[in-house]
Length: 75
Image (cartoon, rainbow, N blue to C red; front, side, top):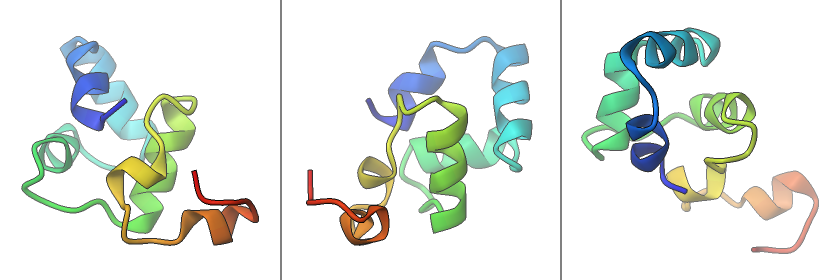
């Protein structure tokens, strides 16, 4: 699932709460979702954690070797 798809399922209150848990703003999440900005590695990890794996780091930052960092084979 993309971040955009995930965010579409949230109302404004839930989006603000999700952003807070990710240590960012709703505006920043929208910028990342619409590909106007790239998520930092730390933000990608926060989004994956707080979305409970619905949005994975590999989708947001395919340029990072997450398989190496996870200690697993590439997906």
